[in-house]
Image (cartoon, rainbow, N blue to C red; front, side, top):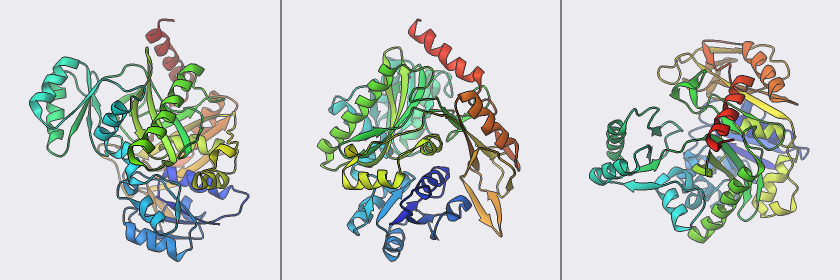
Length: 434
């Protein structure tokens, strides 16, 4: 089987690695903007071109007789790449534009949730006019401000954090009105967690829950990033979750998939990412993404015990309910090494040298290869994943690997440590009152 992976980041390296593990012996091809050495090394051939250049991607897929395509990033979905692949007779296990807009149009997504009475929706308003928006901010008081479109995980600002007070919230919201509509929501208080699922349009197969760490520096300080690292627990539940929390989140995602078909008459096929805030009132939806998370894909795909080619084939065929999708019970810790100065003033074109990483798994992200050497681009560079029978052991494996990657790089040493995990547990106990 000829399989195409679209995208050149850490998420796509994890996807390519999962495909390469298949006992079906697939032949893999890739399209990426810059040469990711990890992906390139797994492929029969690759094309270096923008992933949003739909015509070139489709022409390349046809020339290589691609049977199934997996689109990793969100931007190609927003320009209808999955639609174009399907129109060319190539099965895409990534959602078409009509249903992918649940990620790239936050205003549409919130109005969709409200219309279909989907659980976990916070108090919100969508605005194109400043006076009405300011009045809503005054009414809600403690708010989160979101651009309606794609922001790479960095456009959302919340009061008490990036926004010190109501006036700062109004000022930031007004600056966003120049380009698009603005979503104002109640500022949710709790602990974030991610739930990802394979979806064939009707059935969902859920991965273990993951917690990402957005802040650039240890102690959850500094600016937001695309994600500095993440962890899973042994089994499906993070340490601060109980089974009912996850069952509620699963039901929200199932309801969302059904409602997407009712709304668009288009089956959602691919991976659905639910970002939740666990509050005193249960899980609330922060956002949906129409693909795997980055770094969360690097936690769950190495845990996947079911052949990934069988999974994507079942998604394409609509037979996911007939496949027993299993994940290992082990814990994982993923840690990113990013260019010094990231995200505000990152160093670029700095060489990255990976030494002995022991038992960790290495995923290349936003790097490029030239003359056999690997260099930074200014975004997150490489990630390492430790996998073990406990979070502590997985963290030790990941940190040992990071210590043996050289370059002008920065990382968070605290992700997955006992102190940080316990902080999350204590926080939820305080919120829930037990």
